[in-house]
Length: 594
Image 1 (cartoon, rainbow, N blue to C red):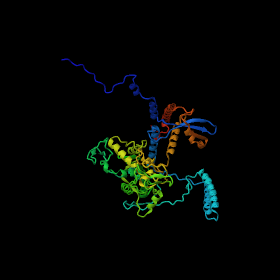
Image 2 (cartoon, rainbow, N blue to C red):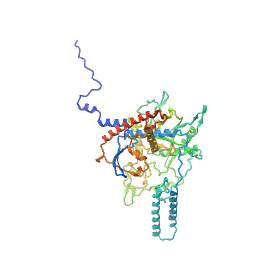
Image 3 (cartoon, rainbow, N blue to C red):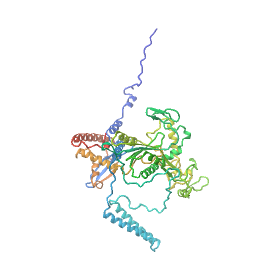
Image 4 (tube, rainbow, N blue to C red):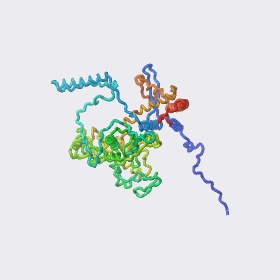
């Protein structure tokens, strides 16, 4: 019997021939290596080149500033730096023992004198309306007084006063008012006088220890229909409503159990008005709690593509009260009815040039204007077009200085560097179909009074103009990257830490300078100039173009920035070791860690 020769096994990954095209394509790109090195050292990969001119001596030079992007897809180092700054802000304001509110100073005599003159001008402007004169003479005097008022407002803007003394424009249109009476289908809430304090209660424990707990809450929208879920109860996985135990990476997670019965319209409307519901929630919390509750949190998307929010609350509130507030929170949308579309996307109303309005394509009759549609809502039996409500609320106590507190802070800021839909991006065909169906519903719903989709429901938008195309509104509500939510992703109350992000950045720079003890050779010079009292007046900045002869290529600038960052980090680590024995209590800010 003849023995057959053995056939060698082919490796699972065949190495390409050296020098071939496949071998060249496997080699890493030089630009990718530069970008990876810059990201690993926290250097902005899209720096802005600014031309700075010193008005004192006329010296002009090109300086670079980070792009300041908040999304990692644009610039990962800048987005991560902003995330660490948010972590620092939440950590500093979560368990405060003293009030962070800063009381404003009293206005100076120079500002009061200008306000006094402004009051006289306002009185003279109103008195002109009652003096006997011709309309032309009255208009001339009013214009003269308005010019003096504008000049005086500019002088007030240069003083230390904060804000505007009067509205920028005189609006004589009557403001539409709605009844503030609560709905009969919503439970009542206790309404207490709001105490100006922002710090929660402290509790005394054993051995004289004081506890100042706070809370972490999660606000979600109501259910729009059963969806496939991974229900984990410890080590046990419960069955979904479909009767199947889904794994954590199942392709059906987040999709409706019955797509035909899922209420996509209500899901889209809840996403559009979720930001307003959150505002109502915090108003109700402060009125029911009786003190100025402070919060810091972020908005994310659930797997079912509905927005929900995680908030850190300073102080504690009873869970029963929080659930009562969630059940009683709602937002009424006082818009014209838009239950059923009147026109189709392929046959919308057309623009009439002579009438300067949109008309019916068959009868040529103009559609009701936005003002006329709102006038119809003044009837006593009128109802809001939609009522948005909250769903379930989860709340738990957090103790200061524990691992749970640090874990909760990072849980709140987990996705702030990503786009809203990145963590819920569809992977399977059912998830893509669910995503597309919700986006299709959002594309035909009105997002604002000026939305072009109002033409589908037989109403002309507010500020109507030619060229509006229903189904192609440019508002962010209709974009696939937002899925209806267009509010702020990060929500921080004004008296959370008593500081803004710029104040936290200044604190970090002050900490670095204190550690280096004046050795700031490798820091940005424009940061030092910004700290000077006359820095904003001495220097003039303008954006430099990449094709300008004095602007080096981006790759050269990145290489220099990486080297400067490495040297700066080395000097900072050396200075920290040198000052560790002298000042062991100097903690490093979170925004400078890593």
